[in-house]
Length: 347
Image 1 (spheres, rainbow, N blue to C red):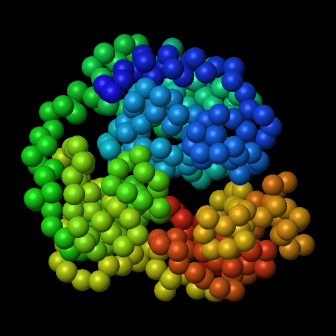
Image 2 (image 1 turned 90 degrees about the horizontal axis):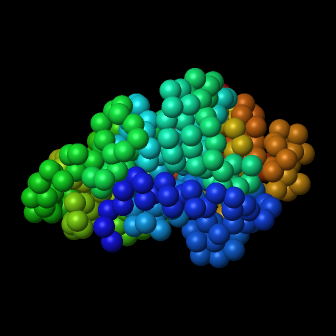
C-alpha cells in the first residue's frame, strides 16, 4: 500500500466521528488492538484510535507502529525526528494536562486557524469527536508530523513538511554490513523501544533509556531500518540514516538508570498521578481495584485504585523486569521505573 497523504488520514479519522464506547472503554479500536473485547478503566483508547486510523490507510509505520501508550507514540515519533513546533493538517497532537508530568492524550490536527487547532480525537467524552483546542491554553501540546506522501502539504504554511527529506536518504548507509554484533549504546535522545520482533508494528516489550548498553547478537535490515537482536527482543539501530544506537567497545551491557543497584528498599514517594498497583511485578499482571488495596492505599488512591501523586509508600522488595524496576508495597506492586521514566523517588 502506498504511503498515505494527510488528507487521506484526516478523511478516515473524520469518518469515525460520533462512534462512541460502551461504558467503560468498550469500543472497536480497543477490540482491534487487543484482538478481543475489553472494557474497564484500564483500557483508555485515544491512542488505539490513532493507531487504528493509521493502520486503516497503511500508515502505521509513520507513527512508529501500533501502540496504546501515548507517551510511547510520542517517543517513537521524536526518535524518527518528526516533532515540529508549528502545527498543520495531518499532524499528530499530544497533550499534557495541567498537573501531569507526561503526555496522556492524543489526536489528529484537522485544521489550524490562528491559535485555534481543530482536532479529531478518540476517547473524548467517551466518543470520537471534533474539538476546537486553543494553543494558548494552560495545558502543553506537542506536535509530530508523519512523513506523508507528497500530496499531503495542504492547509498550513508553518514549519517543515517532515516529508521532503525522506526520499533523499540513501539506503546504502543503512546496510547491515556497516553494523556488526557486539555492544551498542543507545544515543537516541528519547530512548529506544525494545520490540518483540524486527518491525515497528511489533509489540513493545520494554524501553531503553539514552546511554543504556546492550549486547547485539545478530543484525538484519528491513526497508530503511537496521535492527539488532538483543536478549529480550529487537531494537532499531538506524532508520533512514538516523543512528539510534552506536557500536562501542566490548563490555558487559548495563543500564545505570534502570539498575537494581540504584533502586533499593525503603520509603518512596510517587511522582506521577494515577499510578497502577498490580498483583505482580510487570504489566502482564492484573491491576488491583480500590477495594483490593490496603486500608492506607484506599485512602491515598482514586476511585479506580490508582495511587495519587505524592503518596508515600514502603517498598519491601525490588525486582527488575527487562529494563523496568518494580517495587513491592503493602498493597501490591508498583512501577518505580518504566519506559525510561521514574514513577517514584526515594525519600
